[in-house]
Length: 629
Image 1 (tube, rainbow, N blue to C red):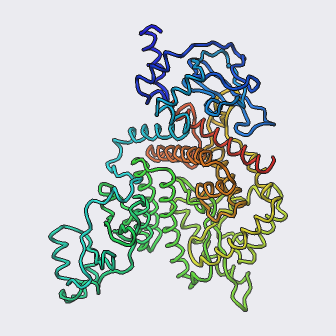
Image 2 (cartoon, one colour):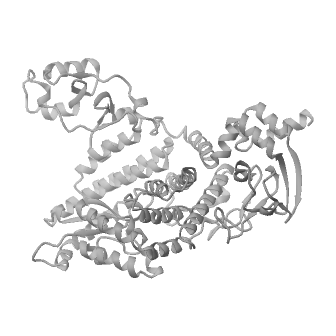
């Protein structure tokens, strides 16, 4: 190949992954062995009848469509479109087998072709090419993440990676003292070193902590004798995490407990102290400040302010590049605190004890997957005291529940259009009534009824008597596992909602030339994970925390599972970015929080989204295989 043509071909390929991050010598090896082929519109490039795949193809120009016999489908069960820069058939070449799809040229396509033997040699010499071919979705996601972080680099002053292990966040060796050290000596040391906390240790194990915040309340105001042992005024209720825990886990612990410091311990030994300042030194709104404001809130104005701060934190974290899974957990955790505080106040107004009932989170909140725009899905489970009836308890709880639902609506969480709220008598039930409700769905539920009931299987305790929710879970798991007809119906319902891959174009768009990332993107993963978890007896409600252990119990290969997880996270990230963009522009996103126009995506995001939808199809095909649908 002439040097000028060689250089032009390399330059063209470098516009696309994985060629954009391959070394120059490996690209030269590839290009020197490529041949260019042309296929007229409708011509078959590859088919299952051709035997073992003999070539690796990269689309130079045009469109290639993949079709698979739906009767034999175990991976993709519909047409897919491949465009310039995309390559195929990786799975067949790696496995040294024939393809399972028929690949046809669209209106005409030029393809670079590489012999299978050269493909395998390139796999051996190029780590970047090998990594892409074996982890395609993960590599695309990593490239997208780099682009996102570059785009947001100038919009966020906080650069702390929430994916960092605590061992990488620790700024200094912990400053400690003995439990018997005097208060005076401890305060002098804290002042001299400019530190905000002192930990008392005994044989390296933490026994107590004193922070500057404690000094005012525990030392100055009571006018304590400064010569007494410090351990007497220290907090012994210590929050600790291992060095391998991530920074976001420390932030969540601070938010849950309303504290400023988390200890880092390894085998019981103190190795560091992480402060809120370490995590959010440049962030305008801090997690502890917001969680503290929530705990002290006493009226709707304070709750509305806290809800706005939660959204601001979420926007800031998204700009920092925090992963979608972690960000939705942050949002859900802080929203839990907000909801719990509202419930506390409304219960106090009616003299209702939290031990008498449990407020249930359902749907995305029940799965710890709330985004920046979410409505309410909740319910109540209660105990029936001796000598009373369920109806009497319900009448007492419903006015409180209505005020809580209204307060949450004022904070930006719209009332559920389907009425799935604790203030609806239909979803304010005793433990026995909930059991009857679930038994009806499991034993006699019609397909249409199960479509609406699915979110109830994502319930978790948010506030009050957790044991009531635990009892319902314990009753539910064996009941579901013992009824394959019910799981079969759930699977059939789940397969009615197909990811929007197009027959003619790469996406099947809906009204307004948009894709619904929640309904057609996230929901297929959520539904399949729910079914697999119910079948395998997995107690978790979070989609990823369901999918991984359930897949392992069902002997689904880990690589297949991780591809699903990566695809889910990308679609969730795209939803969050879309909602973040709407919030930044001041648009009212109530009607289009999950609807995007794919033509407005950049080439990389379009490619990854298409691959993510293909992974959703593969997950659905696995579901169909499990339940013979």
